[in-house]
Length: 74
Image 1 (tube, rainbow, N blue to C red):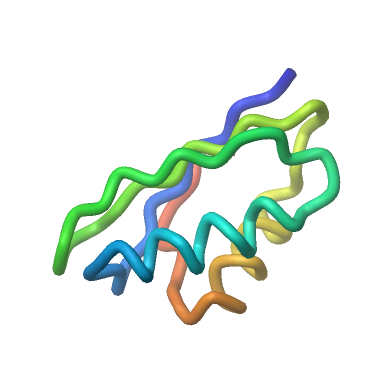
Image 2 (cartoon, one colour):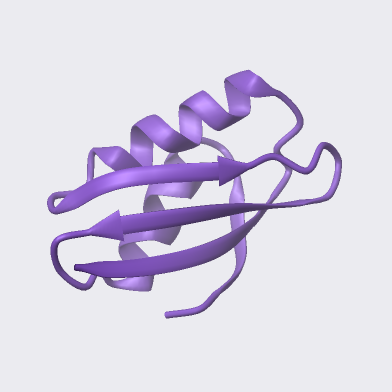
């Protein structure tokens, strides 16, 4: 089991959370995504997976949803 936390800019509402959660959840091996929304600031997504997920994969998924990863703990 692996946990990765990323900081995301540009998220402002529940729809943003849903979009990011959907895109990250589509990565193979991801078991859970929890997003802590900070409207107008830096939000945090905690990704739990059965294996290590490359930070680039998470960044690409977040970008697909229309947002930007500004930092990660991976």
